[in-house]
Amino acid sequence: MIPTSFDYVRAGSVREALGLLALGDGTKVIAGGHSLLPMMRFRLVQAPKLVDISRLEELRGVQEYKKGLRIGATTTYAELARHPLVRERCPVIAEVAADIADIQVRNRGTIGGSLAHADPASDMPAVMMALDAEFQLRSKKGGRRTARAREFFKGAFVTDMTEEELFTDILVPGMGRNAAVYVSFDSAASGYALAGVCASIGRKRATISDISVAVTGVAEVVFLAGALERMKDTKCDAAVLAAAAKEAVAGLEIAGDVHAPSSYRRHIAEVAIIRAVERAYQRAGA
Image (spheres, rainbow, N blue to C red):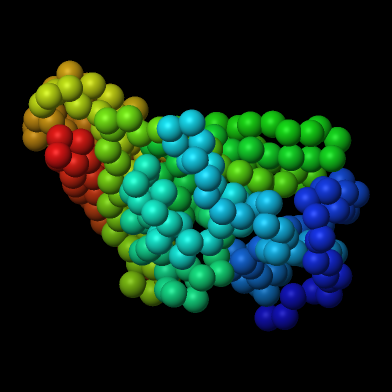
């Protein structure tokens, strides 16, 4: 299909982009375009105007933030995958970015665009939730505000953002002695996760002192698997982990589709949880 007609503006500054969004006429922001343009082609989204922010340098790049990272929203996956500070401070982000889609998508697709799009099968939302990251948003009327990743995703393609807000930065806290691992089973056709899990674990000697596990691909929205909190104060006992993984997905209404039946998705979600926790546990003790 062909998108409906629209106007195109290349923003010369963040202020100009915010002014255009403040008009409240349904204007959409575009950076890499890998999420928005396919939806426009299928007329799932119709926008009277696109505001291109891809050349705004103030929205791009990686800087040190306290003991963690500040990542600009228009930073591409390719930049994240090779950035030395990301690989040092939070290697799981670099690892996930390096494995997203193909080289064309990694060179043009942006992390902020993916997070704002909130595809329920996307990889990065699970990573950001497990790491307890924060997102910085701006609007002309409301100024700046910060939203926790764990409160940002509201449903399939639905977030806490308003139409007038611009996603500007991601704040990733320092990992300390924690370690994180992402494990996914991907669709061979699309590359999206049939089930994906990010586990962040802290250890005191052999005992788990902190754990956060986020799951994507199996529900209408990415979610924290609270059942895994029972792993605290254990030494990653296999039986306890298997029971917690089963409980984490037991109550979910998992829809089957052409890519995988619901029973298979449930099974691989459990497997991904177990593998992510075990690998993060081992990495934290290295």
